[in-house]
Image (tube, rainbow, N blue to C red; front, side, top):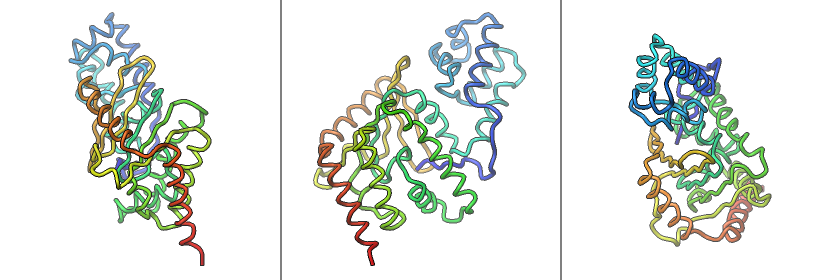
Length: 282
């Protein structure tokens, strides 16, 4: 579970990764270096430098430090990096995912435990965070929930990005937050599917062992290679090596092939939501 709230103190960064990218381009061009040349000097590809400059991806701290050394900027880019990380309410490993989500043309996800954050209601998200951080203050919880809901601006466009999500049946059956919260959450997912904003499938218990045992997200882009993201306990990994991404895509295809059809999945989601609603009746 990626915690929104990598820092316990509330903070608002003065600029975003787009600022970092613009500054990098200005300083690189002033030094007379191409993206490929700078990439070679800081031990990454020129295409990655281009993605940093577009704000699509964020650099690792060591790369920010090497950029400072090559461009002789006196630690400027590392300080900007630190400010952006400290100023974010999201776990540091998840910041790169946020940048990628904003640029993706297609997002596919497999959720083995919880409804994906992009589709969570406020009450459901709060219950998820509270389960993982039982000693968090109300202020911290609301900060994290607000950050998670803020990601859902992606849903404002009627068709972009294209969204496809496979939920393990346990996601439907686990009563996160209680029957009322679950009914609201499942109806939210059903609503997104019915209005054709996303395609949702359910991987049923009857399918046996799932091909994937962790959260998996695949993202495609108009002008950049695809990436995969997997998540564990207090950690997450963005995978962009072609072989790794190809293996993740195969695993996702196996999950989708074993899942119920979109129509049958929607019927099951609404049926389970109705049962939760009935549980709330006096």
